[in-house]
Amino acid sequence: MRVIVTGGAGFIGSAVVRHLIGKGYEVLTIDKLTYAGSLTSLAAVKDDPRHRFLKADICDRAAMQEAFETFKPDRVMHLAAESHVDRSITGARDFVETNVLGSFTLLEAARHYWNDLEQERKERFRFLHVSTDEVYGSLGDEGLFTEETPYDPSSPYSASKAASDHLAKAWARTYGLPVVVSNCSNNYGPYHFPEKLIPLVILNALHGKPLPVYGNGANVRDWLYVEDHARALDLIAERGRIGETYNVGGRNERRNIDVVTRICGLMDDLHPKAASHADLITYVTDRPGHDARYAIDATKLETELGWTAMETFESGIEKTVKWYLENEWWWGPLREGYDGRRLGLLAQTGAK
Ligand code: NAD
Ligand code: TYD
Image (cartoon, rainbow, N blue to C red):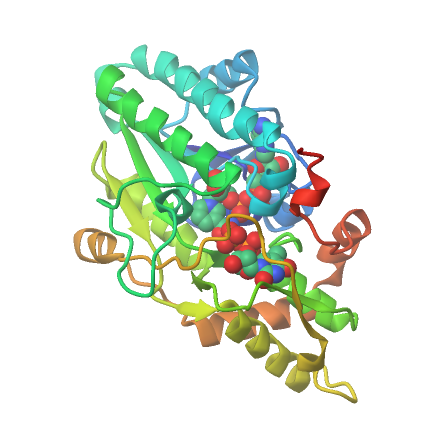
């Protein structure tokens, strides 16, 4: 099995690459290495002859076409994206370029490659478009996102992902490209860039810095350990039905304040200081357009493809805190480039 993984130097992509290499697949990672991408996240597969790396932008049609023609993949798992909501508020252009135009470019390169394949390989080929539950917008106190929930994105990030999901599905309907789409809830785990809530809070707690909680901390996210997501994506690419969407989530809803408090408790146990880390919790100005609640109904993935999450939030968050405490070699250089400062306030946009 020969798989192209775009965004493979990022958080989830690198977990996917490690998983596929572990299964004995041949993998070509394509990544532009933005601020969010790091070859150090691929250290575990660096010397594996089945892994190749191509530094390229998915918006570069010629580079994508050449990658398809030379590597000759059986599958594409498309994860390359600008992924941080706060950055999308102050700089949406990169999100539209990579997430919308980049996905379009990749779909076109895939379509031209796929069109020329012989029948058997053509039937085997899959393009997995990896997306987020944020395309569905915000839930109230009740209910879950299903695959039938209408799209209603709130942020420039989720709007750009929604656009790319529509393109991917249109390429299946119009051109017959064998596309499958996945929409997953919030991931956490090792190699997570420390601008996102969980790694930011772990490292700020370690360094005795304030732990910023947006608004009143009551917003709910549905957390999934990244390796559970990587297994789900492999399964969906392998057995998912063409043209279908699969929601991915681990049934682990938590309020943000409870996530932060749990991390503080683990830090108190694993890295004790004179005062509790919870003393560092600081309520700050809310995120503009902040979705109240996300929660995934993963019944289709569970019943049709037999997937279940292996980590609970309790087991996964403990693993994650321990990993950050033991792996400064990975996050140390990244924190030099991004020190945890607040991102995504309207005052930073220059908008009138
Ligand atoms: P990430 O920001 O950690 O990684 C994204 C990777 O894409 C980086 O390595 C970056 O260098 C690369 N990239 C960005 N622009 C590129 C371009 N133009 N060309 C080539 N490479 C480029 O993101 P992540 O959290 O690993 O998310 C991966 C995918 O999963 C995204 O599509 C995201 O929308 C989706 N997703 C993320 C979550 C989550 O909780 N993080 C949840 C559901 C879905
Ligand atoms: P984030 O990790 O940015 O993921 P997403 O916006 O994709 O859900 O944020 C998770 C939740 O945590 C979200 O409700 C915003 C909140 N948050 C904070 O309270 N403080 C922070 O410093 C950050 C980065 C996020």
